[in-house]
Image 1 (cartoon, rainbow over the protein chains, first blue to last red):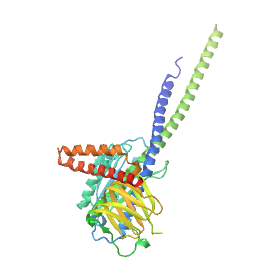
Image 2: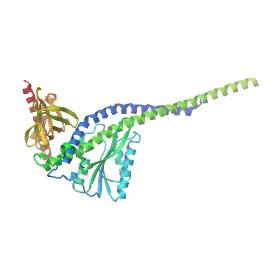
Image 3: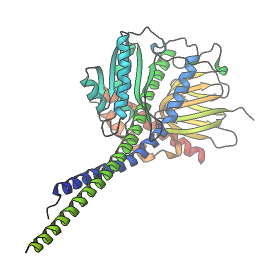
Image 4: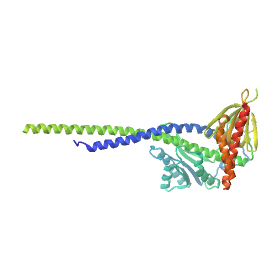
Length: 287
Length: 140
């Protein structure tokens, strides 16, 4: 009986898709745990270095690193952290939309934008819209290391040091929880002093060994590297969480689709049988 | 009781130590520095070497850092390191192996860049071994 062959084929194909999405969901779930552990592990370092920088911004250093001096803004640099692979819901597009909106605002104010891109998705998207991409690095894998992003950062930091860009930002997704990731644009440089805390008020400065310039240059470079690295690790955790959620809903949708198709198929089969019986009965009566 | 300060030691991979101490000894760029509570604000890069943390009534703790940054506030000491490990966790075999490899690389000076790199690696491996030795001596 060749009833509903097309439907049967369709059901089989949806079922195969569901197998894939379910497998991806489980892979993402296990990776998510690992990336979250990593996020937890790298946080203390970022916090401590941020605390030192905060102290430093309140001191009155004898030497002012260019990263601590505000300049009139003619050009800005943005380090964009994106994922290498897709199928993770709206994660990348939300981030790109945020950045494009800011780029438009900057464009209207006559400020040029230069990008340093981390991740395949960002590289192909912003390469495609014709943005000024000064440096890019792709395929850093699921456990990125600091060495991987130093190249891109050096290009942007050098541009800042030489006065080619006057402000530096980092764009990445912020991990709120498994269901929520928030795109975020953070200012890296110049480093702005926050409101003074009581204990640190007054004129004071560090003792430096060997000298202020060497120490501050090294420290501030490390600080910016750590911020971007933290962004990368966070974006990674976001990617796995977003993929898990996207693949879960894809699997659920596939399940629903299969159910509907099965119902249509059963109805068609039942109709065919009924018709056949009617025909046989009709034929017998005629004889 | 002597005055204490809060000490934080972190590496890029995680928090290593956080607690009160009376004295911290760290390998500063210009030589070893000892920090007690109410020290003046101080900033210095660190060389690869041993960090010792002493607190009253407890055995001194020993850590290995591969270089990094030391910040001192009157009641707060922060040590940022690329890699930091507790002295007893140093893998002696790995350190010996790293030392041997670095010495080999030094012996064959093919490129200037590699020479500098090998030298840095050797300094790290030697510092690790020294930390471990000090730690053992302290226990014996």
